[in-house]
Amino acid sequence: MDIDDPAAERMLDGNAVAGTLNAAFGRDVTLMPGRCAHCGAVNVVDAMRAWVGGPGSVLRCPACDGVVIRVVTTPHGTLVDVRGAAYLRFEPR
Amino acid sequence: MTERFVTRGFVGRRSAAGDGDAAARVPPGQYLTTDFPVLSAGPTPRTPLERWSLRIDGLVAGPMSWSWEEFRALPARDWTVDISCVTKWTKLDMRWRGVSVDTLLEHVDLDPAAAYVVAWSDGGYTTNLPLGDVLNGGAFVAFEYDGRPLTPEHGGPARLVVPARYFWKSAKWIRGLRIQREDEPSATTTGATSGAKSATTATDATVRTMASPIDWQLATVSAVRDETPSVRTLTLALPAWAGHRPGQHVDLRLTAEDGYSVERSYSIASEPERAGEIDITVERIPDGGVSPFLHEVIVPGDRLEVRGPIGGYFVWESSHGGPLFLVGGGSGVVPLMAMLRHRARSGSGATDRATSRVAARLLFSCRSPDDAIYRPELDALAAADPDLEVVYTFTRLQPPGWSGYARRVDRAMLAEVLEPLGAEARTYICGPTALVEVTANALVGLGLAPDRVRTERFGPSGT
Image (cartoon, rainbow over all chains, first blue to last red; front, side, top):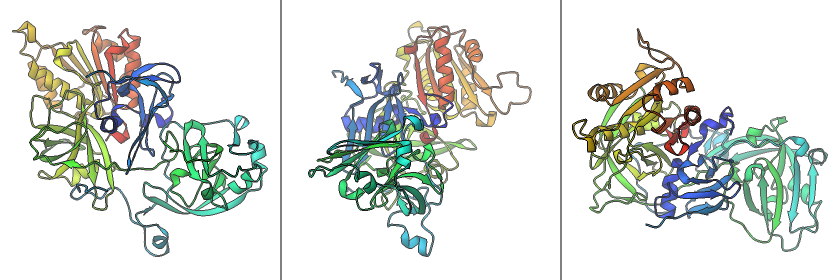
């Protein structure tokens, strides 16, 4: 994304939603690799670009800007949409 | 909703509705605003009008689509409505001009089973509504606000407006309505806003078992220290703390008596060798929702909800080896400080090869010497350790007689500072997005392998 776009300064990384995602998945997901469904690039969650402050948060692929993961916390639970990921890899513990 | 720990003295950055007529029109739990906040997650989509279209499909006899000219030729009217957002702001008497959804639906044949509509937008946002909510004047597709064409930041060229619903249902950059039989959860991407709260409970810090990083714990503020005029460090005692790794962060949650809550992430400034407590260093952002509270209201003895430690990516421990190259801008130095403090405690110096400290350099960009957080400690660490060097660049104001860097971090500066460490350096960059982007790109351009360059962005929302 163009770093002169004023929205760019609000772009964070996966760390910004890591707490919410960890709580949802019940484990640390910051190093979980995910393959972007749009371009195929594989990045760990922490390296994805995060947009917070919306109705939920969005994690975008650092290579193609495509949406990989969407997270919304509601009083009834946390919604996680991973349709933008071809896969998320949960490593054995 | 479960019982929630209330943070003493926290009300959040809100103003109640004024008196009189306006107050009566602001729904309960809402706060009046007179501006038009832009709350978007993601970059603003911009579709040129010649490629724009509005489409209705799904459970209709035949889909219908309008180009921009065709859409503007439809009968339109003015609407003056009060809008409430689930983030609790309310704006009265917003003046819009647009085309009623009833008018759009006149052009299609709705299937009798039609019950829901999914509004979809540029940028991937979707929101769903019962069909009844958008019929009979319940919704319109707006193209003008306050007499002027709707700007992209506010959802232009056209957005859905559903006055009876919280504003996050009023999809910006609308491109179509899909009629459906069933409801579909509208998880969000970019677009409008809302804030929602998680309903986890705090774990009392007196429980003897180690708290899990995914649970909220109660920390007690045991000390407060001012680092610079606008930056302070809070020491949080956490008896159930399971330890952390340098570079990780915690989430803080503040809850007001009425249930309003906010969360923020703060990097842990202290080294893991200090057991049972952590330091967080907070920069006071003038209009911030949280940092003014942490600066002005919090005193030792207060308790705060904390979750963590979090993060596996932006982490350095001495076992990772070096050389170590750290680049920090402003409060971005905080996680790097945890790494340096850990490094200082984990090596015994040149006497023992096996545990000697790796060569390390910190390039620290600050506006002025007064803004250089931890400067006395950094200078002392560097003075005592021949393998550590701290290089400052003061971008706005330099000390008298300063002969060092006096500009923003750029490729030439990075090349010079990196040079003694070489292209095998493990690099950690933390700070505002602009600094992170410039530095990461420059370092890869200088030959560093991308997987040895790790970044963490601090945005306005990070403080």
